Amino acid sequence: MPYNPLEHHRHSIRLKGYDYSQAGAYFITANTHLEQNLFGDMVGDHVQLNRYGHIAEQEWLQTAVIRKNIELDIFAIMPDHFHGILLILESHEGTAAPCPYARPGIYTGAAGRALTIEQFGKPTAGSLPTIMRSFKSAVTRRINQLRRGDGTPVWQRGYYEHVVRNDEDLNRIRQYILDNPSKEVPGYF
Image (cartoon, rainbow, N blue to C red; front, side, top):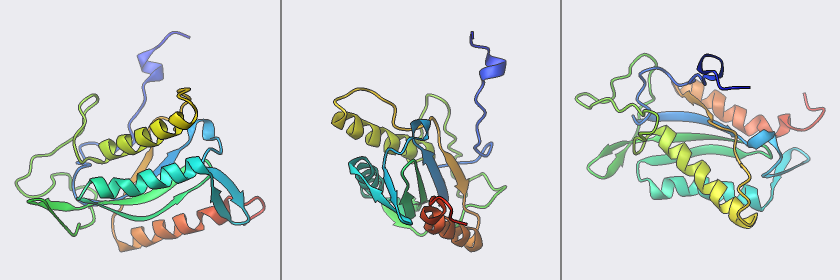
């Protein structure tokens, strides 16, 4: 079937005009390619990570090591997907400050700061899309080294994100992540 931009256009799930480099908490979900159980297996109601799952875990933890304005909250690596909460902190002359929750409808960032919206082909340093691209790329590179460089995709394109609005939202998401392994068990209700 020939490419038709009206039919095959991918629509962004991101908030239009939102600055994804501003301080805030973000809930992330990324799925493996073809939803294959690449990162491990369910054993009872928990996940037994395999070596690929440990690579994903190591690279996620490395995200906060290499970026001083990032804190990681709770996360879970499932056999066929990943959930995590990432906090982008306000940066003040090389130091990180606590982040307020991003608020829906307010897209101007800090007072006097230019809006930094990532555009296709023009990554914005420190933005959520750039962080996720780097994470997924590092995991893919390391897994494909173990696969002898076969180039098999590791992830589905894109990822799901949700801007955390308040403590209630954050706690609901944390509980969802904690409960996720038990929901993967066949017959669990």
